[in-house]
Length: 88
Image (cartoon, rainbow, N blue to C red; front, top):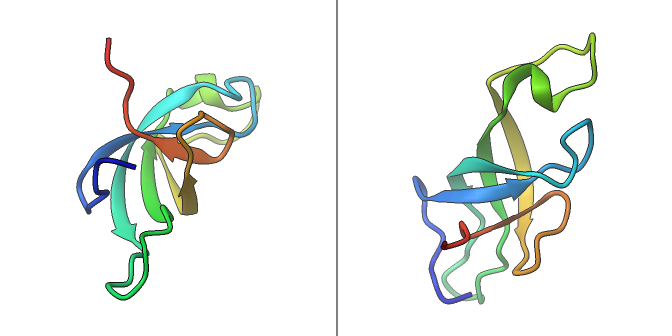
């Protein structure tokens, strides 16, 4: 990981389930689990910005944001992980 995750940085989170499973959503890092004496594990707390009703099954409650606890970093987008936004 070449960039350092810090509170306030925007990343992408990969949705693990629902009709949008596997799609990426923007998220803001709200906490990192780094310890100065250890290498960074890549685990962070996130506030994910959803696509509202499009990201949940019909009839399920939805929210504009979703809190994700202990999301892990992955260079390869995998469900329930975060990564740096792709560059086009």
